[in-house]
Length: 423
Image 1 (cartoon, rainbow, N blue to C red):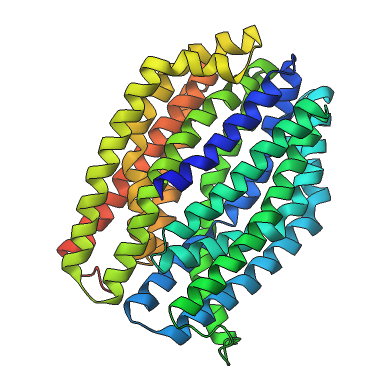
Image 2: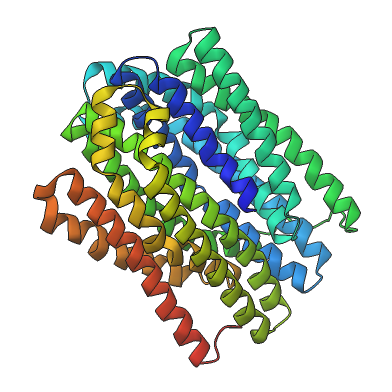
């Protein structure tokens, strides 16, 4: 899962590097703005993967083959509905980009171009989330690895071809991602069908379309959606406020956020494994195994977080120069690099315990943790230190990540002390 997840930020790094060498900051700032909006929308739909993984892992622990098939179909129907809704709302979203960012016309032109193409990959991207979550819940770690590998290799190859050789600039990066998403969907469907056949699961299960069951799924998804919305609100605030500070700051933050994405996706690899293992243990009604997998996850998470901090401290400036050759962007990004060096250690626990709570299907606890951390840790801190401008943004992000982890740890310990881990 770590290997497969790392391919995602590597793709973002290639996007940034290809666009970052076109010679002007407005290209990089434009794709940063456009891709940030797409990321917000698709990450908001992350509840589709999370709820699928947690519920499937528990059904797998109970060896309920009928439920495994029904969950897959219900989640796919929900993902298609959300995708169509996003496409329908896309004209309004484009207006929101200009209103919230106050970016200049050159940047907005590039952002609109990217967004207008990428939004049509929503059906594939959201269905892929469900298929990925289902494979995770089934403890099929190789499936997501193959899926993300196909997605990102396709994307990287097309990125270089469209942008460098055909000179399509930002539009080339958008088309590369769209084609890669639909290629991945075909591949994911084949993987899921093969896995279902291997595990003796009949996907043609009758009675899967139950209004009550879909309502229960929506109830779980509602809390995870709120949690994801607040998370994306904080990340989008960084992008849009960075745009207000200036084009160079926006471009520099786009470069640095690739570092954070590299950390988050690697640590999420451990978290995804935790979701499957903890969910399976809950399905088996084994408190002992839940506690065991939590301890193992914390051990590996701390090890990787430390490794990332050391790696960024040693090679951070060199990586920045690989991602862009615009002098003012390099200077600005280097200035804020210390925040990135500290973030892996500060953020480690929030990623890991997100995985634990998804496995326990404790969506309300995740929602409440996110609400408190965002209101106090992010917006509260930024309100006090807003005069620091971009340093204030990175301080708020650091406090936000730390507080998410602390609140989830406290909640887990309470559940453990009160013997409520299986509730």
